[in-house]
Image (cartoon, rainbow, N blue to C red):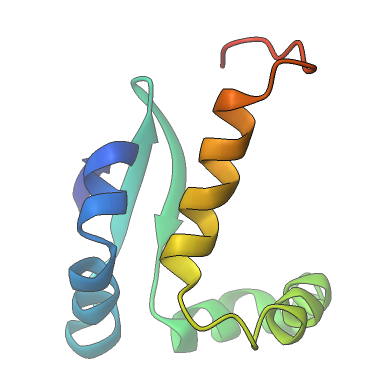
Length: 93
């Protein structure tokens, strides 16, 4: 399984998604030296978690976000807003 730090994964997200989708690779994402996420093919996700019902909230979220054309830019805007916010006291993770 290939591993990327979060900054690298954000820069290469399109390539990562293509490899996961078309080649079936799994990709680990790390943040500040800790594993935080794994990108897996959707079919594998369905096989592993669909039977447990754990994906219901994710499917609702997917529908709510389906009209966002540039999802990468949307996420980047969220991070920028959080980093520039002066009214939040957020601990480093």
